[in-house]
Image 1 (cartoon, helix red, strand yellow):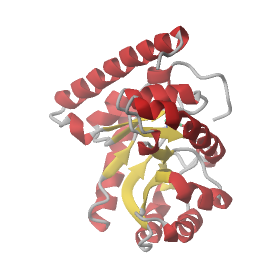
Image 2: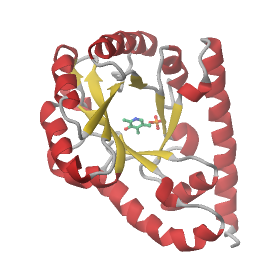
Image 3: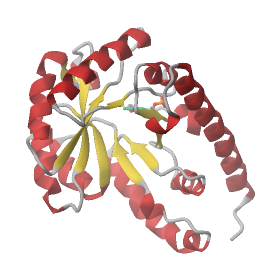
Length: 250
Ligand SMILES: *Cc1c(COP(=O)(O)O)cnc(C)c1O
């Protein structure tokens, strides 16, 4: 099926941006002797149209990130309508792995457990419990990252450093969840190098108590190379891949 010229132009821009990001990830890994295959690129598609998701799918991107349950659900519904024509070109948008990266209310747990592969923003035992209760009918456990706040500012989300072990225990206690590791969004105007070094320490402590929970979700458009230098396994990239978002409050 022929796509309109505007779509082809957009797809060409995405090809270029994706290639550049993959090259930067590879270089950042090489600089510290890591294998780029250890790093999962999550394309953060919040505010982007589903045509971008379809284009990303054609380019082989499978891991996509959204901040809000409502927006993710709307996109999944809309993508359902993409499936028929796209299937002819070999794209199965149902193969997306959805990563929830934004703050989550417990009343969204059931919805999220219905489609998400991973929730990166679990920051309180109550949310872990709600997700586990909601995940009981899933085929696979829900992957969960414990989001930690490095400055204990409640606004951005994340558990205080002191309370991280208790949160990790609450997640690990539930077989419906799989504790993957830690996640953070560094404080604004902070030294990213120091922040990600601290996160690496916290990751090592968590991993000692919970073997297998070695993943580190860290690094966004502005700082993903620094995060990779400090062991990030999941980088969450929006703007550098998809361009600037319309200003929204997330
Ligand atoms: C929006 C968002 C990102 C992506 O940010 P960019 O700076 O656009 O790459 C990553 N993580 C979280 C939690 C986000 O909300």
